[in-house]
Length: 89
Image (tube, rainbow, N blue to C red):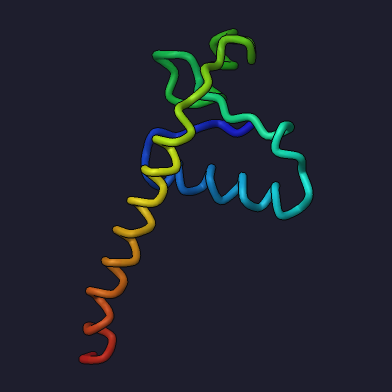
């Protein structure tokens, strides 16, 4: 189970972890994504508050993948747009 962060960076990490697990031979059926129950911001906080794993919610994996892709595209664009600085300096 992977704790899902709502940010683009968090989504990108989750998707990357999923791909690594699949590449390592872990069956897709064994990989589960869960979000902590509201109002908790992450798994550690939810568990400390007494939530069980059954309280965690299933995220929209398609939306999470889209968010991760947008984050990756934005990061790539920023790197490319700042490349000129390295050449000038």
